[in-house]
Amino acid sequence: MLPAAVTVDFSGITLPFGVADMLATATSFLGIYGPWILLVLGVIFSPVLYGLVMRLMGHAAKKNQVKS
Image (cartoon, rainbow, N blue to C red):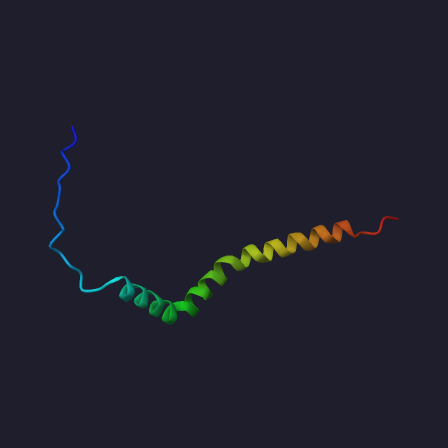
C-alpha cells in the first residue's frame, strides 16, 4: 500500500528573486554560451543536412538523365 500524501505549507516562504530576474539570467547565459550552443547544433545537424543535400542531388541527377 502506498503511503498517504504529505501536505506542506509554503505560504510563509519567499524567494529572493522574481520572474524578471530569472529571465535576465537566462538571456545572459544565452549571451555567454550562445556561440557554443550554435556550434553544437551545427555539429549535430550538419551530417543530416549533408545527407539530405546528397540525396536530393542524386535524385535530381537521376531525374535529369538523358535517355538515348
